[in-house]
Image 1 (cartoon, one colour):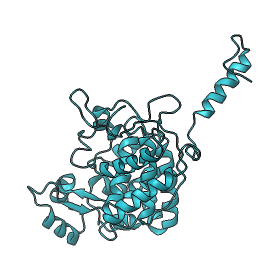
Image 2: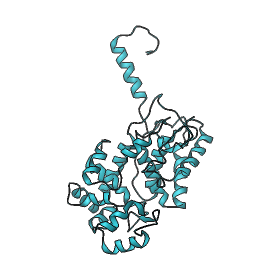
Image 3: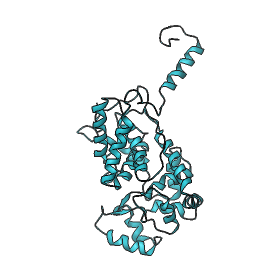
Image 4: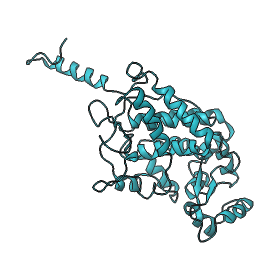
Length: 319
């Protein structure tokens, strides 16, 4: 059956051709099995190397994918550099002096280009890197569907408006994640990624000095590293008990006031998400399963597929 050959086609054939075309343009876990069979192993090796050098990088690479997908979908727009006539997302409020790991992506992309030129998209690299980073730190694995293509545009304004800031209330958090199709339970699971990674002093200084809902001993140690003025970029681990292990300690810390981002504290503040925190605190397996499922859902946010976008040769610039 040739969908292109006949100039006169019955409606039923047109519909079938449309459905076939749509199906062929969907994401697939085997997308590169023929065109670049070593793609996944190259990415995994690059991630493992980076995380072994610096465990914190695992959290940074996971966050790259999150900050990409929440801004007009998983299209690698976050990787585009600013130029004289193009403003990307790297210097938007949530990303400037905060998002990192670009060089790891560059290295992986370079290796992929050497092996399979113009085949593996930067958006797919980010999705696989996020999974492999979590696995490298002891977290769950999940199947990453592939076939995303890369954007030729970026939106600093969407980055500023779409990425949830650490100052949000519980209702603000629920709304921000609901706007992307996530339930409150999925949101709690995704924020459980704060079991790894660090926060800059500037992200929690107001919380630390203006409110009294942080464990007293933790507050004292945080203040030593995060003065009331200065030291904006001083880092503190989001999970004070096991900062480089992807486990459910974040939820246990929530129950004992040992978290310090305002938005994190909102998850266990007498509201509708307390039950999810309690469940994940007592059952690490359930948390990891729910987290993995939510990551699959996030990776499917508005991908560019088929003939949309492009496969960038260099993730930092359009072809």
